[in-house]
Length: 230
Image (cartoon, rainbow, N blue to C red; front, side, top):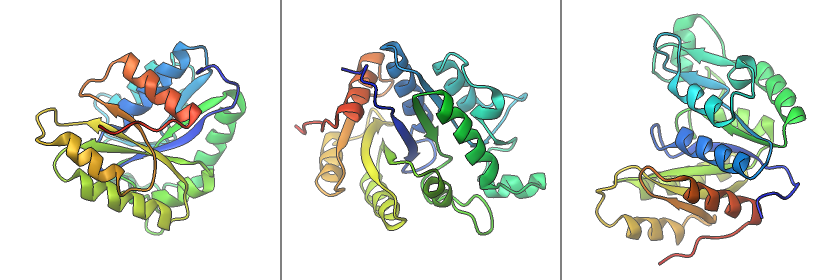
C-alpha cells in the first residue's frame, strides 16, 4: 500500500524544540524508502554543530542513504545551538528564502517524496522580518505537526495548530511522539488533543518507536487514515 505513485511532500514542524521533528522525519524517510519509494529529507536551517557536525543533519542524511548533497540537505547551518535568527545575526548572515527555494526545486525535481524539516517550533523567527511560516507558505507544502507528548503538550498542540491555520497553511495532520515515557495520563492528553485540534491523528509513537510504528504513520499519510482513539 505504500508503493503508490503519488508523490508525498510535507513540511514537518513541531510544538517545540526537542519534540522529535528529526526523529519523525528520519523515521518516515526510512519507512518510505523501505518499501521502494524515492524518499529524501532536507532541513534548510539548522543550529548546533560540534566539530562541524550537526546531529539532525547527520540523521536525515543517513535515513536517505546520503542521497542528497550537503548543499541540498541544508542551506543555512550555524554553530551555536540557539534560535536561528540570533545565530544568523552572530554569524553576520541573513537567512533568505531564495537559496532554500532553489534547493527545494532541485530536490523536488529529482525525488518523488520530499520531507522538509523545520527548525524549532512553528512560530520561529528566521530574521528581523522573516518568520518560518513565510518559508512554509512559499514552499506551498502541507504541514505535519509533531506533538511532543509530555506535560504541557495539550496547550502547545492546540496553540500550534491554531497558529498554523491562522498563517493560511494546511495542517494535514499530527503525530503524537512520546517524549516522556513516564508521563502520567499520556493517553488522556492525546485524546484531549484529538478531540479539539480539528486535524487527523496520523500516528502514536512510543518512546524510541521502531520501524513498524513508522511504517504505520507513513501508511496513514499516504492513505489518509485516522488513528482510532482508545
